[in-house]
Amino acid sequence: MSLRPLLTSLFLAGVDAASAPTALGGRLPSTPARGRTIVLGCGKAAAAMAEVAAAELPGEVIGCVVTRYGHGARGDTGGIEVIEASHPVPDSASLTAGETIRRLAGTAAPGDRVVFLISGGGSALLCQPIPGLFLPMKARITDHLVKSGAPIGEINLVRRHLSQVKGGRLAAAAAEAAGDMHTFLISDVAGDDPAAIASGPSIAAPFEPQRALDILEHYGWEVSPGLAQAVLNWNGVDAPIHPVEIVANGRTALDAVERAARAQGWNVIRPGDELTGDATETGRDHAALALDLASRPGRHLILTGGELTVRVKATDGRGGPNLEYLTRLMAGLPDGAPIAALAGDSDGIDGSEDNAGGYFDSDVRAPAQACFDALAGNRSYDLFDSFGGLIKTGPTRTNVNDIRMIAVGDST
Image 1 (cartoon, one colour):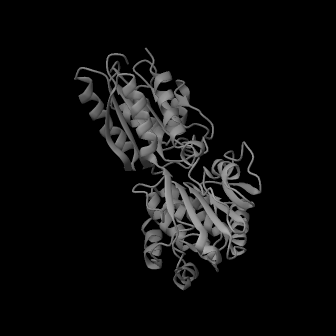
Image 2 (cartoon, helix red, strand yellow):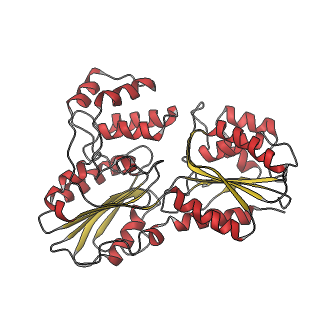
């Protein structure tokens, strides 16, 4: 019996719980501002959040948000412009968005209200490099760090030090409206530090230029004297203190999955809501956990979240962290084991391909040797495509990182 329909429905329940209509609806200011309301935002959920803002914010509402290509508006955003740009490496549209959104922030006046709508993915999408750094170099640095396997926290720290709009600088640009300023976040960051989500456009963070340069060198980027000077000459900023609310995060999605699974008789085990680290190593460890549970009676669902990383070994590789995780998990399970698994990114895009993630079970899977071969060349997408294991949802327009499920029991 295939558990693909069940696990897919559980995945989508998690995504829905973390979506903008569900998570942001009813939480925005309901009283009119004395002046205009300026909505500024970035991230994979930005367009969906803008739709909620346009429907619910009273009075004159203007603004601009930037989201990933394909994640744009599907409904009315009123006076809020939506720009689509590249992710995870910024492009010219990212630069246009940075310039437009920063300019709008600078028009804020006393009596205006400024509402920041921030979600994961905003670090690449909102781009305005520091003086002395230009877009092509910024893009190459980002691409290098993403492919190096660096943790997202370190990548975002570097991004913050290369930007005129991150680390609270966007809020500082709108400081004239500091008396009526609000930030709403959909978090894709372990620990939910508001300054780390999308590198904190509206939230000040510690300024550590030497640490940013050290991270670049640690991951093999040759820091030129010009880049070092540009980073060291750039100063931190004091952003206005204002109300900040996280409306959804990874736990929001996992809690919804757990409720739905328990309602169908599954014993849910959550060994980590915010797992980080190497995708293949985590897949290996979870294979051992699943095999241990397979020796016990009952139906068990191992449920985890967080954001795993992949060290890119092949420049022509295809497949993201969820497929690499599943590939190593599958390699560690013997043929016929009563185990099925689905892992996907809540934004609907695993890495840079067209799939959210993948699925396998005891009947629909690849042999262990094929798994190891795929991992050696970062070809997990091709592997799952070969046996029909890709999960494709299209862009979900939210982002609370990964939802990984391993179902263990007789019904698999």
